[in-house]
Length: 317
Image (cartoon, rainbow, N blue to C red; front, side, top):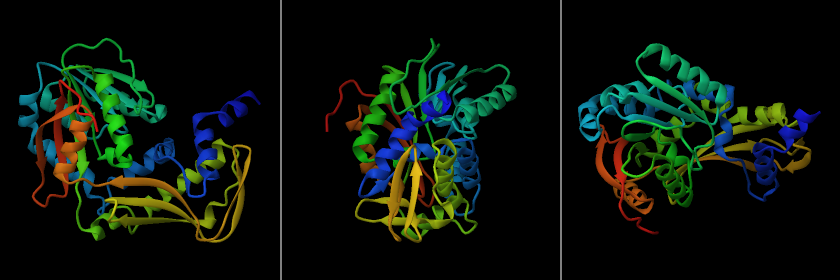
């Protein structure tokens, strides 16, 4: 009984109730990543339509020597949203890191990924920090220069003001004289973008629908998952892909002890993924107290990898 009450009074429960009570229903994207959601996202990264992961891996390989020139001697790499840490070894090797700190909201998935990384690199100190990286975190004592790593263009999931706040929290976590290696997706043909978020195999649809299954499992939900479908839309005016869960018909359900009703065609907005031009990305950096040092992209300009350093004076928006 106590465990149930704790779950129903969790941040997840409060955010779900608040979001579903709105006229335009929404649930924060960070709740995609329970164990099953994290596994599904790893499947997404292997899909032919999903260009970000393989393009970012290529940029990290191609610019390893450039990254090394920016790093100090045997630095510490702090990854925000570590996930499976598939890209991390490339950065660790490029900068000859002595310590790796993985931060992720999914504690179980983080434990698996950091254990695998530790086993593959016996000389590397590996530290797992379960937590919400959207807020400044106190890290254990660390040696050497600190290099933050924020991969996968996850910054695109945040509204512009929230993205600035997030980048400022990274600066607070990392401290002064730190570097940030950050991947940011670029604006491109909308057909390529929509295909990347609505793949032919339906994995992204399952990833989106898993959020409803998580609500049913953890918050005593009664959502008829089969009554919803996945939809991905490019919004040119806002420069973002939107993901929604669309009710196929009128539905009623409960979640976290509250009752909800939706009309057919009504949606739950689950994710935004903003895409940035290079000037927009640099403005974002400077507004959040970072100074751009380097930028690399692939031949087709599908994706961008940036290196920023902490600025001496914040540029206020």
